[in-house]
Image (tube, rainbow, N blue to C red; front, side, top):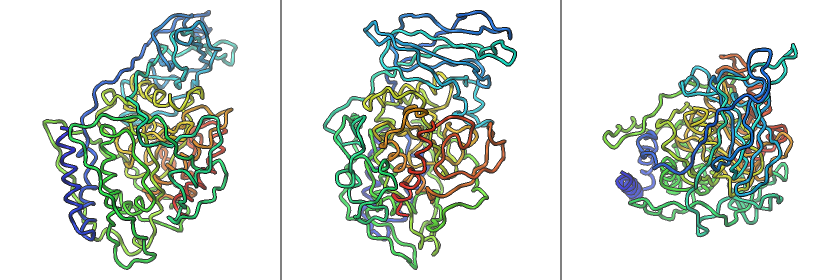
Length: 569
């Protein structure tokens, strides 16, 4: 299957490249218009990793309300794990109380201090009344907490006092989840650099040394002046990046293409797709295969991103001068789940659009404000076990806003451990909490590395489970860490700006503008309420929660300004 698919893509590339550039646009569009399922591969084999699920028992006297006022486990030896969380039977039942754990580092007698586990986690889930939001597999859950390699644990869950002095009952079926992320993909130092900075250091002057060296938002070679120095992009440095085993029939390397021509100010006819834009489009097709074929997507320069943007569905009119959308939201219906093909059956290609006249004169005159696609470490790169998620993808019609979160997993991880943190969160979301996949669309670590989250294609409007009530037509970005009292690293803020400049730009969204979304239900806005948000918003804007932490929330203005600059606005 892998060999035949790789061969078919190679043939497609060769056939399209053999066409004159003027005829290449319809050919590229024909390929790009195919649904993700037409290019999907079967799930990868099982990877290592495990979850221990231990029932909690009473530790103290029962509350007046009838339930145990304190539950937990005394110190005990367990199999190795690195992430903890607590789950319970009813996903609608809140946990009114505190959860604290202490752990013992593997192979030592050293126990940690008591660490708090964030109990408010339901606001990160799927929207009510959706298939994922009403799944029978769902459980109530705390946020996960990264504790590092450990082999001993102690936990206490205490109910908070009620108005009458008694403790409210704890939810039924409390269990401690201990997640071992398992081994990740093999790594090698003979690989392409990824964005990374030394932990604890200031972000360096990347304008002279990084992958965006000399690049300004308008495609010129003058450096961009950032609104705040913390938004300067991290320099590229050689880091331990995940390697990938060669597929049975490796894809041929793409030929070197000339630079994309400048987009004319006011073209009178639709501009043909340049050769470099075509190659960028073929690279976009490849992004659907990256969970199985490549550990990362490389940086895609702004010129190439701009060239291919008009040919990517949905075909969103560009509005270069508008800072906001109309108050009436675009259609927000969730598209039908797309089933991945089996080896026995193959799906028919989608009905292809005639793109020769897809752009009106006004659309052709509008510049595609798309930032450079940043380097993205794929699910293959961080070692996602594709066998545990749902085997289908769910899409919305567009992406109108980005909601920024913190993972609330703590800050005690290194950038080298970030893939392990992601594998652990993934297992916790799917196997412990009952979600269909990793909840967020993207993740960012403290070094500014960007990771693909929920499967379905990094350039596609994949429906996530990140902002209860506002998952439709949005994307969720989780910055790994807890930022209620700790400031986010500058590299993380920069990565958020880079990612949103590209992804929102694909859908014609101005990062400093506002958008209108319709609530699917939550504790701030009733279902059906139309709400205006910043295009780059914090989780707390749509739900009563501390997320993404006060100190990260305070940096979103910087991210918006920088993202708009990267788009060339």
